[in-house]
Image (tube, rainbow, N blue to C red; front, side, top):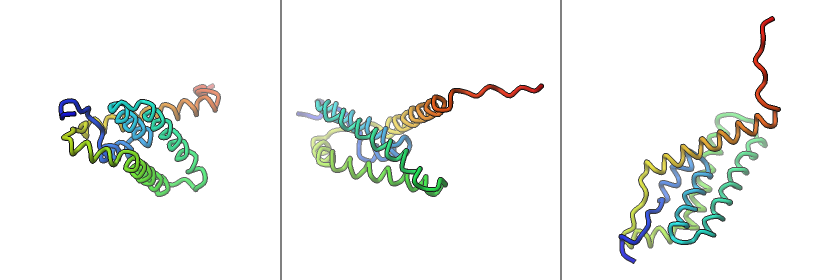
Length: 144
């Protein structure tokens, strides 16, 4: 396979940046995209499902701690480290081969966009869940 036949992939660095911006959801999308680009759609679906489970774990984990900014930052950094370790284990050898074959990675700008979009998706999902569980938007106060 020559360089022109190689698909573009997301690099380990790009996955780390997107995870910091948009959680493991962004990483799952990027891992799945890498697998799909290489013809491994089934493994890609597993990667995406795994990332959703990691996101859920990190959503429910903070309820075990007192909520404060330090805990939130530590959990965000922990999530990035966990994702990078998993990504390196799953795709590290693939990255090495890809680079040796002259493969090109997607731009860092694209990785940032994926991270921001994942963050927006999670925010929308969280707000929707809160509204559903609370019975909807409360009525506006009226002055009588």
